[in-house]
Amino acid sequence: MAPVAPVRVANVNKDKCVGCGACMKACTRNAVTVWMGKFSAVNEAACIGCGRCTRVCPRGCIQLKEVK
Ligand code: SF4
Ligand code: SF4
Image 1 (spheres, rainbow, N blue to C red):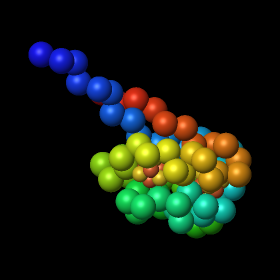
Image 2: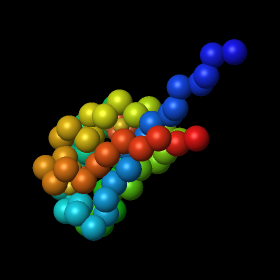
Image 3: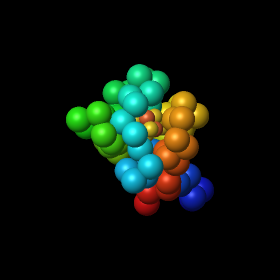
């Protein structure tokens, strides 16, 4: 049986996030929520790992991580 490809989801470095909301606007899955204009959080169940949010973040604080 072929190995299953790893699933990737977005992961936010909350210490660097300034809550600008760019990631939330870029996400076509509504998987990112910005809390109180301070930091964002990703709903991993909704994220499809497309990487759009990683490209728009002005602080470079979103990266894709592999989940098992
Ligand atoms: S990787 Fe894609 S689906 Fe996941 S949070 Fe970022 S923009 Fe949304
Ligand atoms: S785009 Fe980056 S800095 Fe802006 S809210 Fe999202 S994670 Fe934070």
